[in-house]
Length: 339
Image 1 (tube, helix red, strand yellow):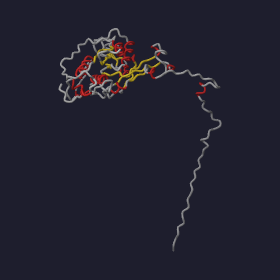
Image 2: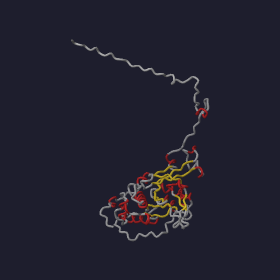
Image 3: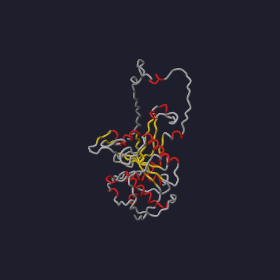
Image 4: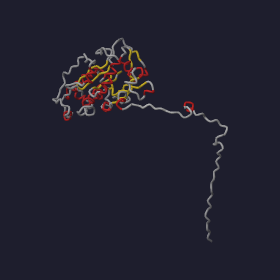
């Protein structure tokens, strides 16, 4: 006997959802619109003054030279912030990565030129690296490649080689001019570290001046605050620090035994356990590309900046005969160097 199975009937499924709790009660209080108390009711005529800000005016307030940032030698070797900063400045001034025409050099190339031997990561640079050492390294690199460069203290209020007659305001103005000048580069010596300023920002203290010209609309220095953009070669720190200028002057104007760590400002001014009093090795140094004729901008920057009185000798360096013409890229091949 055949048994034919009937198709199973489809059973429908329905859900009943209670929406009573979702519906708003007629007696519930509406939340007040807080913005209404700041808005005037009724029609009124709004007059908008034209904003005259443009790129040429804003560049006086905000400046970040991307080429300086490109030339930051990051990450650095172990304890080599001084050498890495010198290489960063040299590449900006003389290499095609910055404003020059020569091939960029690496920090390992610079160390080989200066007579150091591998392994470079085992060199403890701290005990023999100082301000005069950096200037001497820079001058030796210039001699090796046959280019003309000069370096000196830019702003150093205390200690050996201090810059006399330069106030914080004049130093800031000259620093801003120098950062806009492609023939100048800077190194900032802070607590146990060297870094390179690469830009700045002038911030108005009043919101109404957000798009205002600093020359015409903000005559008083109390109406604005200047931040310096500083490139860091250490991989353990942010690539760019944004530091208020008054914090930098606070660091440079401290004297032993007091110390201010600019990268850890939350610690405040510390008093060291030392008998030494007076002086401060922290400073701003300037490195510049020279030619037979200096521009008017370079003269204005350098007219109040004396050269360092330190004995920065260049004896004992082996040089190769390079031409002074920086247009020849073939002069920078660092292959089979005999130092």
